[in-house]
Structures are given as C-alpha cells and as structure tokens.
Image (cartoon, rainbow over the protein chains, first blue to last red):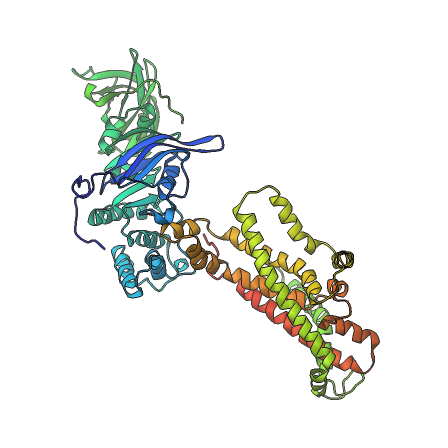
Length: 355
Length: 266
C-alpha cells in the first residue's frame, strides 16, 4: 500500500499530463430509454469526484460504463489518456465498490481481499501481506478468517473497500457504497472514506443520490438529471451558485422566485424572518407573506411562507432560544422576509426541472 | 394456542401416519434377515444367509452393475446438459427461451409410461437396438430436469454482481468461472446430481421400455416377485440395497441443499 500522504487535488502534471478519467460525448441507451446523454467530464488525479443525482439520472450507468460492465453507444472513455471504450473490465485499471458489496460468499474475508492479486498471479505470501495491510487500513484486522456472512453490514462494506483498494487502481469507483447503512454508521464511514482517500492519494469516483454526502466529501460534484450533467463544480459552487433550477432544487431546498422576468434562487438559511409590521431594513430585498406550514426538526425549524406577490419560500431558523411550542405558534402569522441581494442567484432559463 | 388435548391427538395421528408409511419398508428390511425360506409372521429367527446368496447370484450382480452404470452415466449427462441449459436460460434472452424451459421440465410432468413408449417406438423406428445407452437416454430425460432446476434456482438466488465483481478485480471469463461461478454453484450441482442418481437407480417404468432383455436391479426385483419361488428371500435383500442406495444420496443432498452461506441472505 502506498502510505505517503499526498495532497488530494494537487494537479500532478509531471506524473501524468492526462486526467485520470475523461468522458467525451458519452451516450448509452437501453431500448427507448436514454440513460446517458452526451456526458463530458474530466476527473483529475487524486480528486474526490462525485456523481450526484436522483435514481434513474444516469449516474450509476456512467459509473458502469467506466468500469466496463456496459458498452457505450457512442463517445469515448479514457483512463489516464488511454482510450478504454472497448477494453473488457478485467483489463481496466479501475476497481469498484459495489452497492450490494458483492463479496464472494464461499471465500473468507482475506481470500476476498486477496482475490484481485490472486488472479493477477501475485505470489501467495505477498498477496497475504498486502491483503492484511488493506484490512488494517479499513480497521478489520483479525477478521481475515471469517466468512462474509458472519459480518455486519458496515463490516462487509469495509471488506468491499479493502478488496478494491488493495489493487491500487488508478481510479476507485464507488456505487452508493453507504446506501445500505444506517445514518450514524454512514456519517462515520463518510469521514473514514475521505481520510482513506487522502492518505492513499487515490482518485475516487463516487456515486450517490444523497446531496449532503456529496457536499461533505467531494472535491467536485457533477449533478446528473435525466442522463445529462446539469452542473459541475465544487460543493460551494453547486450549493451557493446553482446553475439550473434542477440543481437548486436537488441540492438543498428549491427556493425559486420569479420577479420582473428574473428567475432566481435564495437559500433558506439566508432568509431573515421578522414580524410584518417591522420596517424594511435598508439594503435588503424584502417580501411579505403568511406562514403556511411549520416543521419542527429538532436543531432547526422549517417555515413554508406564501408570498403576497406570488410564489413561496422555505425559511430555516436554528432553534437557538425558542421552544417547540413557540415555533409552532408561528403558523398563520403574517411575516416579512428579508435577504441580501448578493445571496440570490439567477437561474438559467430554458432547462426545466424534470422532477 | 393449541390445547393440550388437541396436541396429543395430533401427535398420535402423526405417529400413526408415519407407522403406516414406514411399516412396509421396515417389514422388508426385517424379512431380509429372515432365517426361513417362507415369509411368515412372526419370523422364526435371524440370519444373513440371504445376503451371501444374493451376493453370489450372478443375475443380481449383473442387474446391480447395470443399474449403477445407467445411474452414473445419466447423471453425468444430466450435469453437463442441465447446467448448460440453466446458464443459457438464466443468462440470455433468446428466441424460444420459454419453449426450451418447458421442454426441459416436460419429462417430469409426463407419465413415465408415455415417455417410455415414445422412446421405445422411436428406437424401433430408428433401428436402434436396446442397450445400456437406450436406458441412459431414457433416464437422462428426467435427470436433466433435476439438475436444471437445482442449478437454475441457485443461479436465481445468487447475486448477479458477483461475476461483475470478479471481472472488475481482474479475472477473465475462465478465472471467473473457476473461482466464483463454479464454487457458488457446486453445492447445488452436487445435490442435483445425487437426486438424479437416486431417481435413476430405482426407476422402473421408463426403464422397462428402454432396457429390452436387460435387467436393472428394480427390473430384476419386479421379475423375481412375479415368478415367485426360491429367489423371493433374495428379493428382500435386493430391495434393501435399492432403498439404501436411494436414501443415502437423497439424505446427503438434503444436507447440501441447506443454506451453506452461498445463498443470498439479507
């Protein structure tokens, strides 16, 4: 295992000028269904790159095209500058962590992890050593002799990860790897995955439908919708400057308004809510309306406000000093909503939300 | 909740049914150790002399040997063809897939007498002399179904991502088959093979039409009972052998069919 720490997003131009993954005009149909539609993207060396989108948006198909389980109808897939579009999966320098883990049930944990090295003809002693190192990395030391069926979901997930990284692939493909885990475990694994990626300096291509997961872990995110990429950018860009209405709605809450022919979005935590009778603050944009719904969610409360001039906005407030009784009393109140002009972002017209 | 009374009644009833089903088998086993030549109850004493006689009876030896050969050969054919068919039906969507599936299962549904007569007339029309191989063909018709069903059930319950995972980790088609597909299938194949052998070993009807003048062990038993006479005590011994050679594979196969950790568990 490579153990030296490495800056993840470092553009290592002298090592390899080509990006680790390059997809050009990629297209894949199943019968009449257009699963992946003209997808272009580049993933740099050591990057944590996430494909984010709802189910059926083409993100998993894109991952399977890169792994080689599917053949594209047209377009090209390059790994490190080499076109692999028609290379079988076993000759591609990528490894996959499957959503259902796909551990071999008849093999022990150690045999599972050593499998990739075994089929490549690595000597028994060496592959055992490497497999044990990989198990140590995912904190499953001493579990080598067990069968997958004797492990918990979280442990199986770690074995699947160890089995993939032990081969030191150019790119690690992760297909919703945390999808089957409960919330606590998922949050813990997010941190662990990120730190493993950091210490290996390996390129991760991560598929998820969980926007929070994507925002937490990624260097960059590509938001998928109906087979196409809506936007590529850093988590901050995606969240604060959504390019389309779909991105605004899928990443966070869809707070889209249309005023004087301009469609724009404003994030719910950027909106200040005050009693209607209070005067308008200078320099802020302001609207009045009525609270239609109050959703108490422990740490925060969500308010859904119908605006006088049409449309609705969601407002999020932290429950700093208010009790649940107090916040629920807000229902039906008339309020004034205010936000800074620089917190609004114009939405590209034309691309409608398909959800 | 069941009351105590109904539980006792149910237990007694179950016991009676079991005795009713097993009594004839036990009776034959006891008679195999009978000292006298005439079967009458109660038996007068125990002896293993019929085992010695049966062992040295050339007819029984030939019949047993023929049964073993037919069973092993038809099981072998069933493993090859049944597994191949299961893979084809599971993996590919092709024209006539449903028909293939139906035709494979048909011999199990058809009465043996129909299969037997059909095969017999076909062999006659084609001018094929009845031999070991015609018996094997007859037995293979239903042995293939057994292996096919077992293999297909296992394939359907196995994660399809296992093959992808193997390819993803660098194994080519042959390595994937050897290291993943075959081991995952193996218990299903072994249990299918054992069941197929057991079915072939005690089959009478199809064999009757495809064996001609030859005797498998069940056919010999049938003939000996019909003719009666001095060989009857040896029949009990032969039946005992058939029971054991049929029961043992079935028992092993039941063990194999149990969850071995290979099946998907969620």
